[in-house]
Image (cartoon, rainbow, N blue to C red; front, side, top):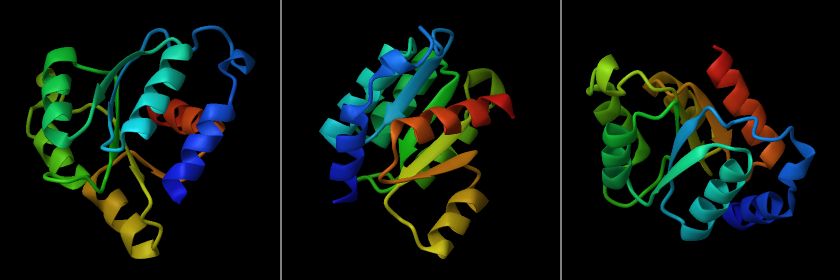
Length: 147
């Protein structure tokens, strides 16, 4: 249900309220196993000017990161096969010249305090609890990139 609510909020948001192309300098990899959520996030971020590469799992995400050297990664935590934690470890193992230092924002429906602590302790730069609205997404991206 949280995923559905996130999709509803993102679908209703109009990027026209944002300055034109505020993310035009960014390449963002979105790693999300839910097709609709991945497409909506990609569409929304593209509307804000970002070059967006979509990946449906951790394997595709790692390949996209190696090829595109993004400025930012948005990754779901719970995915089939390799999860977001494993993806984070693989990215950090790449080394800074190969994208290993790229900021990563975790997205998850896990809301328990222990889950949040694990996400932060793992090394994600920020956490977006699902469902989240577009304003929260933009705010989190801007904060992570400013740090």
